[in-house]
Length: 143
Image (cartoon, rainbow, N blue to C red; front, side):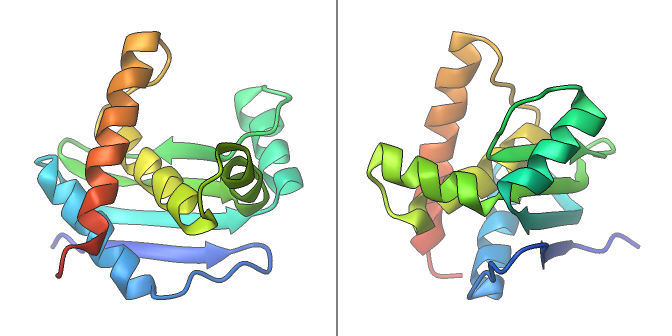
């Protein structure tokens, strides 16, 4: 039996409000990519927490806003997505957008990675940005 579960956990003081709204939106995004929701966990944390994961698991010594561990099997998306809310806040200020908008971008970015999109080359990054914009517009759609 395939359970469709999207979890939100917090390793810092951040609490995602309206979790059901985000969960429904992310499931809609997954469906729009022709994929199925398995079990996906979003873990909100601070910069130091995510830096340690980056160092321990990816051998990178840099701060980042998101690290995803993809356990997708076939078309069923599964995995853990760690998000530094500190970094999201800083990026929101840098790009002069509301925190909520930058958070949606990062949430959907993780889902797009699980859906097979990459962001290493300039072309891949451009496609990823286009997809993020497209999927963020789905957020206000009535469920």
